[in-house]
Image 1 (cartoon, one colour):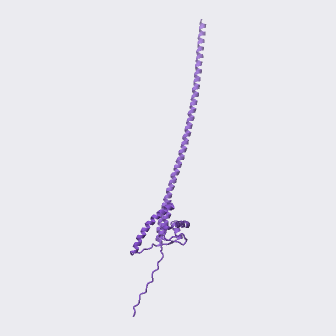
Image 2: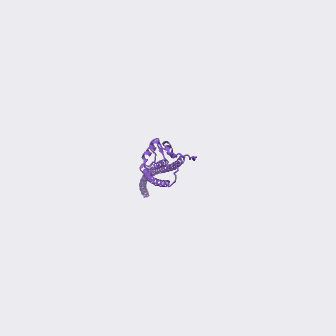
Length: 220
């Protein structure tokens, strides 16, 4: 009798990575418009693995991470050239890390794909961190606006005080001029009174002298 042969196992088919996301899911995760995402994909295509600007494009976890980094750097005010320089540095570091992982895989270590929910959580954490940074920047801008407004108010108040001081100085100068004029008038009147009084004294003295002379004539 022949021994029963064991059934031959069918070769396992490679399953598509569970971390790939479609175009709409990535726009929702990054909270950007489809046109913005297409522009980023076209601009930074050299630093993406599988993503394209097509509607049916699939994005790997590393693509989503790269695009989230792009979003954060642009939100901080960096230009496309500066963002590309950052990605070039990160891409070089990631290439070194990928070579190390490839060596580990060749030595027998299995690469485990992260589930889609884990990737979403990681990207969501990055987005929340970037949103916190943006909120802090908005708070700083509001504080700067308050400081600028206070400075403007102080300048306006200072201008009003200077105008008030100039007005007071003008009023004081006018008052001093009037006082000088009044003083000159009083002195002029006083000199007139003194002149009149002197003339009256002379007339009185002459009258007294005439009276004395008359008395003498009477006595003679």
